[in-house]
Length: 77
Image: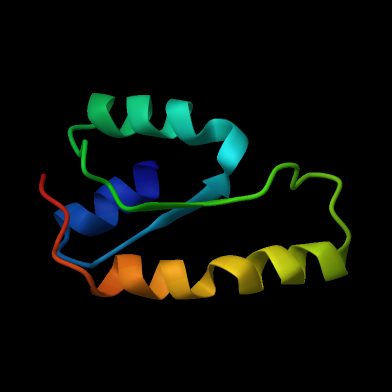
């Protein structure tokens, strides 16, 4: 989330990609960092023990959401 906020402050669209297990924590952190509208996309949990194939499937399942998040209206700081 820190990187997303930093890039947004620099004027570069950014999106956080995280496990859906951490959605609430990401929202809280975004608010604490002053970017409550940070763009986030969540993949199915778990990630840590996922195989390469499973990670590829997770990435493919959210790629359209990532592109949409990056091309939608700018996040507000």
